[in-house]
Amino acid sequence: MVKAWWQALLALIFPARCPACNRWTDVPGWCPACIAQIAKPRQVALLLHKLRWLDECLTVTDYTGSVQRLIRDIKFRRMTRQAAKLSQLLRCAIAADRYGDIDYVVPVPLHAERLRERGFNQTERIFKPWSSDCALVWREALIRTRPTAPQWQLDLKQRRKNIKGAFAVTRPELIQEKRILLVDDIFTSGQTMEECAKVLKQAGAVTVKGLALASGAR
Image (cartoon, rainbow, N blue to C red; front, side):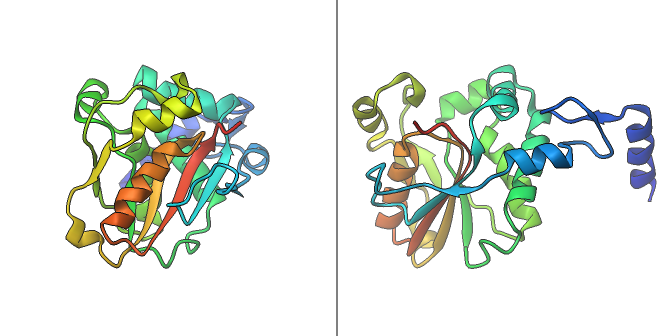
């Protein structure tokens, strides 16, 4: 009761602005008009991207405008408070029961060096609250076994080489016969998710579906 009262008081004193249109909103986060325009989930054409280990992949929105700015704020300016806005976008775009058949939500991991440098995994900050709201089990089942160059700097051939063999399953016995939802902040060529799906399938996962917040695919 006290927490709800305090949050209401803060909202009255410091009203929130929509990160897309900058208008005042009744609750922290996006205004309804911008949510309706931005949150447009679509299935990735796996054959077009020549992805064979992923069973399907959904992206919530495009990697442009306010979404791009918020993701960059989190990753490069360490503005972790922005993650709550992206989690809200997920809640509005993806029905809570859409992935009711999933056993685990597994994030694409950072390498240990990158994690120490940044201090957090942005994918976890964005997706973990959403997975909790959907009553889905969060499991950090993957590790990145070696540092890799940022994928956006590379062409497709270089991306495949860069990411090949870069992931491993931490406890394969927990993955056997499981249905996995693999999550990441950005989908471009799909090579990162594909490599993660490969090692999950090789560890015995029955299905690996992908879910990315933003699509930078060309």
